[in-house]
Length: 355
Image (cartoon, rainbow, N blue to C red; front, side, top):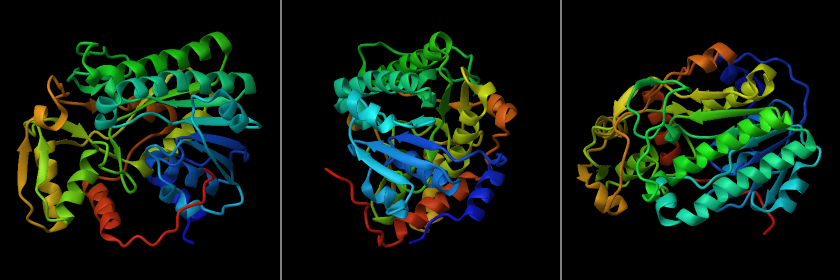
C-alpha cells in the first residue's frame, strides 16, 4: 500500500514554507476526516507520528479517501455525527488536538438541505467545542472565505467587513453559520481558555475533491475528460484564487501547535487570480481536449434568487508572519494533479468502517 513517506512529508512542509518543529506525538481527532481536506490531513498527521481518530458520518466523505491509510496501526475511524454528543465525547477521549473540519459543504448541499446544513454547522461545532473544553484539548475550527460574502476587495484581510445578502436567501446561510462558528470558537477561547484557532480557507482544491457538491475544478475536469461541455455558471467573469490542499494542510498543523496563534483567525489561500471563464479554458488546454464551453444562467444552475461573489482574493500576510505560510503550487500544478487523479484507474480498496 502506498503511503506518503516521512521524506515526502518534510518536502511538503518545505514547499509550504512550514518548518517541522519535532512535536511530540499525540492523539489527534479529525472531524470530517474522510472528506477531501480531512483525509489529506489525516495522512499527514500519521506521517508525523501522531495517533489519529477520524470522526465522520460519511454523508459527503468517502471510505476511498482513507484507503491509503487503511490498516494503519495509529488510525481509528468512527462513523458518527458531530451532533451526537456521546459519540463526540467518546471520540475525544485522550485527545490533545482537534481539527474540526466536519461541516455541510458545497453550494448544492446548502441550497437543497438548508435546515440540515444549519443544524450540522451550528450544533455540531458547539458540541465539538464543548467536548474539547471538557477534555482540555486545543482545537482548530475550519471556517470559510464565504464569510466575506460580497466584499470584492482585492486582498481581503481577517479584519475586513462581511457583506452578505438577505438572510431569507439560503445562499447566505452557510456564511452566516460559519460566522457563528467563529464566534463560538473565539468565545470558548476567551471565556473558557480553550486553545482555539480559526482558519478561513479560500478555495482549497486538489486530488480527492469531488464536483458533486458544486466544486468547480473537479467538475470542469470530469466534464472535459468525459467529452462533455464545460458548464460555466453565470457570466464566467467571477474571480477566484485556488490553493492546493498540500499547501494548506501543513499550515493547519503549524497554526494549532503555535500557542501564540490561539484566539486568532487566519486566511489560508493563494493570491493567483483567475476568472471562472479563463479557468474553463485552462482546463481544456491542460487536458488537451476540445470540449465546448457553455454558459449556464445562475437561475438554471441553482434556482431563482441565487447570488454570487464576483471577486474573492485573500491577503494571507497574517498566516505568513505567524507560521511562514507561503503556497508554492501554481494553478497549473493544481490542474495537473487533479487531471492525473481523474485519469488514473481506481485500484484502492476502501477502508472498512463500521456501519
